[in-house]
Image (cartoon, rainbow, N blue to C red; front, side, top):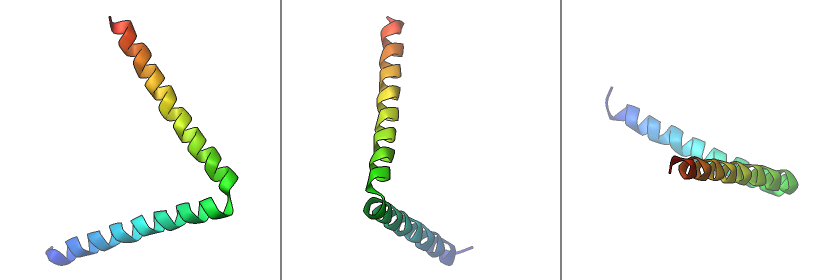
Length: 61
């Protein structure tokens, strides 16, 4: 396939990355309450997973 395939892949990744950044910026500026709720929900999920892992490890001993 050659180098053009790798260059196209890099370009697609770059476009997707900048598109995601633009979407997040737009979401933060236009709907800050919803953005805060999304971050809060994500952090709650991370903390719940950490708590579950801690309970699992404590039950091992």
